[in-house]
Length: 311
Image (cartoon, one colour):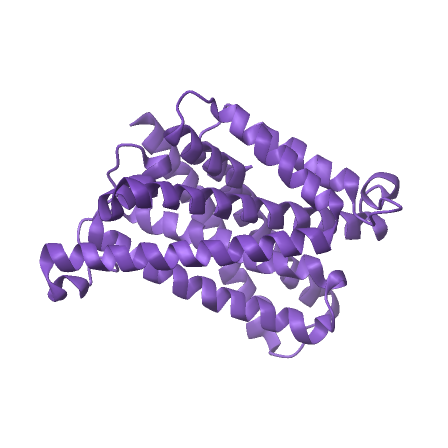
């Protein structure tokens, strides 16, 4: 829902005559069709889209470096302000914690493709670490130069802020290319997210956690969880009429609530079956601290979002 909504926000900014709901519907229909066609088709399309994204991200970073160099000289490229700036409200730090939670959900979703992976016990753990490392490096580099180009968080349209920055560093031509990259990124993200959701629901249906006739069904010829993919598409349509801030609040609530119960489950398992390797530190103390931190983030993020909305 959030992925498709962000993509629609950028497209609506570029083509105001076309309503956002039309872009969201297009995302849902095309992405669902590709995922229903099968994991091999989706993988090949995703590989091409990823290569295009990396090229555009590299061009963005290089143009941003050139922009800062021309404006402030080589010394302008070295600054601690993107990492620490006095006067930044603590709510912004909390928002960063939420971003880390979203990123963890994305890395963890790699495990939902275990059944489609060759030698999954060896490949999947490495894939999670490598993707987290590569994604972290790319994000830090991009966010750092972005803050050098445009310090602060004030934008004419916060939902499509990067679109305006792209024009500042590369003109209208690069802004057009950057828009293409953004849409490709949102499309590829939606493709992966919907595929992982569909297979996670299938595994739960096959194992009887969810009703097997619906969630455990595979299309006989395509061998894809068609019902689950369509369900994810229908849920994505709920983004029609929402804005990005409201939709991400659903992730805040879902993610931190889930993380809290994961920690509580570890404690309950320890009390019932005893502590495993690591003793009470790993099975009682750390999960308790994790649950408290998750609840604190959840409560404070919702409070700050409410205050910002009232403001």
